[in-house]
Image (cartoon, rainbow, N blue to C red; front, side, top):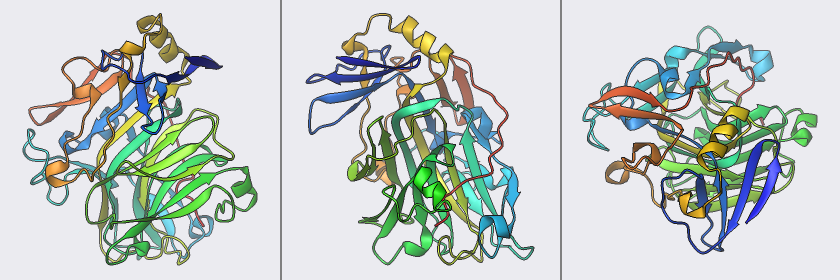
Length: 370
């Protein structure tokens, strides 16, 4: 076992043939099936949005954003405006089911709306960020179905500042009859010097997908280590970046927007359209000293048998295959001393064995512009 110190945060790499599925006191691991190494993370955040109900998304660890950006600053023919009301929970009617009718119609899950009325010169969209801002290295995963309306950008990303950002971005204009693409982006000092244009840096890759992202839910994932960022779709490796890797703790974001820029978002759409999220799962190390103190208490002597492997999704989590595993919903208490979010009888309930991090945050930079 190699143990490196990253401030107060442990970065653990384990070389062994297998890890037993214990109570997870010593963390969570990503199993690279091509070799015997495991990255171990101390913290988790899991959201099951197929069964999350209510009007307050912040109860589930995400804070919807509200701000606007002028057309000039947005670098498009339209400005952008984001409203809390454009982020909506729309759970399944049947709390025991994993597919079926939703409470408000349309796809069940967390909906991020782009509105079709832009007559006032702004396109109304949705953005939200995690309340927690302490994620440094980890495995970040989202179940997501993109908009079928031409002219929007949907993104799942991690952000520290304009030169340290990890993005998976989807332009609906790039979806054809049978497949789509994902734009993989690292915002780095090079992209900042180029006017926030990562296109000609090593931190940009357009990767084809063997499916249309707007037809089903798929899992999109990136694994971030000090050496690299690796991207996946439905468990299939897409690409690895190894230069200018972020090295600070930050937040996860999701957004859905348009500014009419023909070189990027295109559009804007002429009708309301949603990007829908079925789940988010993040397993990471924390830069928060109190969280690291908690980890030291529950794992005072590192024991590999108390590290739980993170199950990989290897097929589209859609319809009859929508059910995936959540440590925080396992009755065997696989999320000791973690902040967890549950549902009970169709109503959202919050059970937290550690404190929820509440902070004031305003965000004025979002999806990368190319």
